[in-house]
Amino acid sequence: MAALTREPEELARLVVAGDRRAIARAISWVEDEHPAAAALVAAIWPHVGRAMVVGLTGPPGAGKSTLLGALVREVRRRGCTVGVVAVDPSSPFSQGAVLGDRVRLVEHDTDAAVFFRSMGSRGRLGGIAEGTVLAAAVLDAAGFDVVLIETVGAGQSDIRIADLVDVVVLALQPGSGDSVQAIKAGVMEIPDVVALTKRDLPGVDHFRSELRLALGTDPERAPALVETSAVNGEGSAELWDAVLSKRAVLGDDGVRARRAAGLEREIVAGVAARAGARAQQAIDADPAVGVAITGLRAGHLDPLAVARLLDARVRGEA
Amino acid sequence: MAALTREPEELARLVVAGDRRAIARAISWVEDEHPAAAALVAAIWPHVGRAMVVGLTGPPGAGKSTLLGALVREVRRRGCTVGVVAVDPSSPFSQGAVLGDRVRLVEHDTDAAVFFRSMGSRGRLGGIAEGTVLAAAVLDAAGFDVVLIETVGAGQSDIRIADLVDVVVLALQPGSGDSVQAIKAGVMEIPDVVALTKRDLPGVDHFRSELRLALGTDPERAPALVETSAVNGEGSAELWDAVLSKRAVLGDDGVRARRAAGLEREIVAGVAARAGARAQQAIDADPAVGVAITGLRAGHLDPLAVARLLDARVRGEA
Image 1 (cartoon, each protein chain N blue to C red):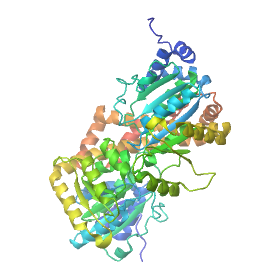
Image 2 (cartoon, each protein chain N blue to C red):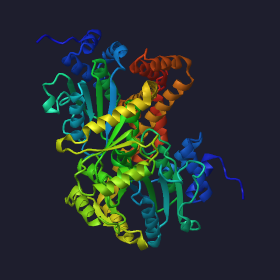
Image 3 (cartoon, chains in turn cyan, red):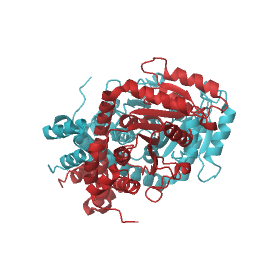
Image 4 (cartoon, chains in turn blue, yellow):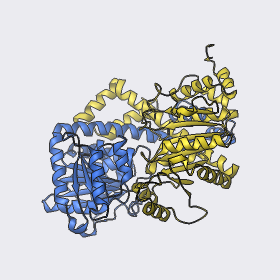
C-alpha cells in the first residue's frame, strides 16, 4: 500500500475524492490540531455544505448507539451514504486517538458507503469540541450524503449541538425524568425530533404522557415525537421521515443561518479554550505564575490577583 | 440611613463586621466585576476559609429549593448562622442584578443569622461563575458558620461545584433516571451525600434500589444516601449529620487541597471566559474581524482561518 500523503492540499484532494485512508487521516489532523490542519481545512472548505448534518443526543443509557445503528441502516436502505462522528465520554470506544479509527458498527465495516469515527470529548472547554465540527466537515467534503453526529447530552450542554447541525434528534427512554424536568424548566434546548426509545420498557405510557405535556402541542414549535424499539429497528423509517420533514420546514436559508451562528459560537469557544490552555501552561511552567499559585494555595494571595496575572500572560502583556 | 461606602477597604471592613448592606454590595461588586472588586477581594481574603461550604446540586425539579429551606432551618436549629448563594437558571428569582437581593426564604427574612442571595448564571463559559465562588467567599469573610451554594446540575456540569465546596449534596427525586444512568456511566462526579427527595412519591422503592446499585457499596467511596420529604422537613437532621460526617472524614487538609485545586480550575475557566468575551467583542466591533465573519457566513472563509485571526486579537498580536 502506497504511503499516504502528508501534504495538506493533496490530502484534501484525496478526501474530496472519497479516499477512506485520507478521510481518516484528515479527521485525525483536525482532532489533534496538527500543524497542517489549517491548510487542510482551508482546502476542503469549498466542498463543505452539501451533506445533511443530523445531531443525535440524549442522556447516557437512552439507547443512542442502538438508535444510531438503526438510523445508519435506514439511511443506507434509502440509497444514501452516511458518515458518523460519535462523541461519547461514556462509550468504551471514545478513548481518543488510540481507538479513534475503530469501527463500532461492525456490520457496516465492509460497506464503503458508511464511515464511522468515534472521538474523545477530552473534557474540553466549549462543549462540543471544535474537532467534532471539523470532522463532520471532512465527511461532508468527502461527499457523504448524510453526516450523523452523536453526543451525550443532559440538559444545558445540548445547546451547542443544536447550533451545529441541521436537525437535532433527542433520544429519551422511559424513566428519563430529569430530561423531562429540564424541558419543563426551560433549561434544555428543544430538539427538532424526540425519539422515545425502548418503548417496550414498563412505564412507557406514563412517560409518553409526561413527555407530551412537557413538549407542548404548538405545531410550529413542538418537536416531532417518534417511538422506536431496538427490536427489528422499529420506528426507524418514521424517525427518518420526521428528520427530513423538519429539515424541509427549516429550509436552506434556515440551515445556513443556523450553521453560521453555530460556527461563530464554536469559534469563540475555541478561542476561549486555547486561552485557558495557555493559562494552564503558565501555571505549570511559568516560574512567576508558580509563585502566585503557591501563594494562592497558602491563602496569602486571592484568586482575582492570580487571575489578573494569568490574563496578562494570555494577552502577552507580562 | 447613611450612605454606604464605595471605598473597597472600608467596604471589606464592614463585610467582616457582618454589616448586611455591605455584604449585599460586596456580592454585587464581585458578581458585576466592579472595577474595585479586585481590591475588595484582596482585603477580605485573609478572613476567608473559616466557614463550612456546602454545595447543593441536582437536576431541575428535584426539590432543591425545598431542601435548601429545610437545611437552613436545620442549621439554624443547631445554633449556626448560614449564608446562601443560589445559582439557578430555572428559578424565577435568578434574574440577575434586578432580583439579586430578593430574599426567597421569606420566613428567614427578619433573621439576621441568615443571608440569602440568588445570582443569575448568565450562561457564562466556565460553569459555576467565578462570581459565585467570590460571593461565597464574601459570606465566609462575613463570619457565617455555614455557606450553602445551590446550583442546577445534570451530569457533567456538576463537576465544578464539587471542587469548590467542602461537601457536595446531590438532590434526586424518584424518576431521576437520567442522573442514575449518568452515575452508572461514570460521567457524573460522585457527590458526598445523595438526598433522595420526595420519598412520598410513587415508585420510590424501585428508584431507591436503582440508586443504591448505581452508587455502589464501597464504604470509602460510596456517598451517604439520606431520604427526605417536604412534609415537616423530615430527614433534614439526618442529612445534615451526613454532611458533617463526610466533612470530618475529608479533614482540614483534604478540604484545603480540594478548594485550592478548585480555585485553580476556576481561575483558568475565568481566564478562558474573558478571552472568549474579548473574541466576541472583536466579532461585534472590529472591522477586520467583521470582514472575516462575513466571509465565514458566505462560505468563502473557513472557521480555522477566523479562529486564527481571533486568537491573534485576543493575544494582542494583530
